[in-house]
Image (cartoon, rainbow, N blue to C red; front, side, top):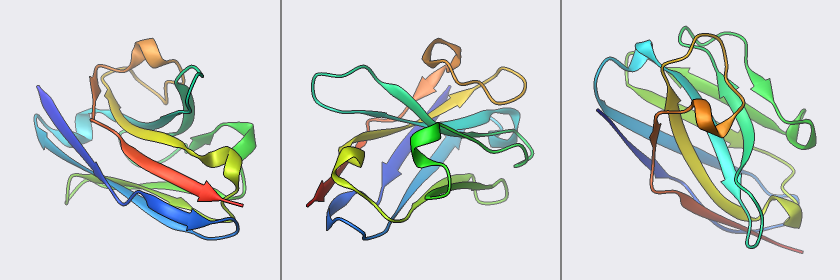
Length: 124
């Protein structure tokens, strides 16, 4: 089992930045690829960013490329999502997830453990 706890969400204005963090407890953190997903009201949960077990090969959905940066610290069992130039379309509940698959999975079904989520609201 892996327990994931997100933090860092909040209400910000368009153009602002937020940094989300996810703390992991349980089995060896470095054994898991990590991802961030988001779910807006009435929409499917979608992949936002992912990173491999070693911290390489970051992957992003097109709408956040150049604005969001995913990183991880295996010594501290944390993964972060730096979000810059936020816009109202980024408003959603953001979830941290862990995957035992190789590489950087982008499909929700390939993730084994999920956090409770943290709300990000961007006002115009």
